[in-house]
Structures are given as structure tokens and as C-alpha cells.
Image 1 (cartoon, helix red, strand yellow):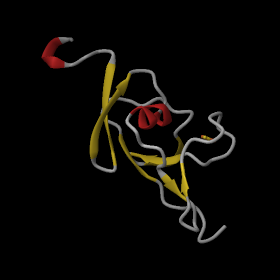
Image 2: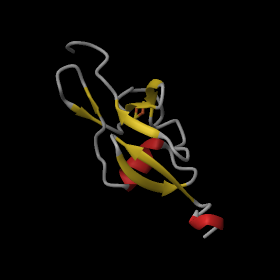
Image 3: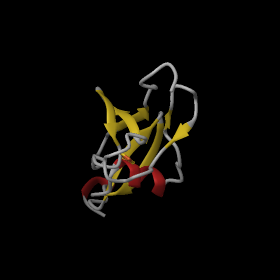
Length: 94
Ligand code: FES
């Protein structure tokens, strides 16, 4: 544990307003899965999506992070203070 009660090996972030923690260096997708969140995106038809390919190819794992929209959660490391939100569907229907 570091100064001020901060664990340097952990990051604190939120998902749809819920405070969560993860190991520093994890992707956003890994951090969500480690917290039991299995889906975090909905298609235009309302179907739940989360981690699928894990390599940035399928776009099933989109989240909004702060002011950034449609971030691929499987590629981007979670950072201290990130405000991760369910990403709005890209299309009205699939
Ligand atoms: S899981 Fe396929 S792009 Fe992220």
C-alpha cells in the first residue's frame, strides 16, 4: 500500500457509476470481467455484447470512456479514474 492508502498495483475506475478496482495494466475488458461484468454493450437490436475476439477485430466490446466514444475495451488499458460507460448502439438495427 502506498502513501494515502493508494495501492500502486491497482487502479480505481467506474462502470456506469459503480466504483470498481482492477489490477494496473489490465485492459478495460479484463478489468470489467475481473469485476464480474460480462456484457457492457448492446447492439441496435438490444442484444448484449462484451468480450468476443479479444484482439480488436469484432467491435463487440465497445464502451465510452470519459469523452471518448466507442472505445474497444479489449485494446485499451484501464486507467486510474476512468469513467467507463455502456456504449450506445452504433446503428438502429442490425
Ligand atoms: S472483443 Fe472484439 S474488438 Fe474487442
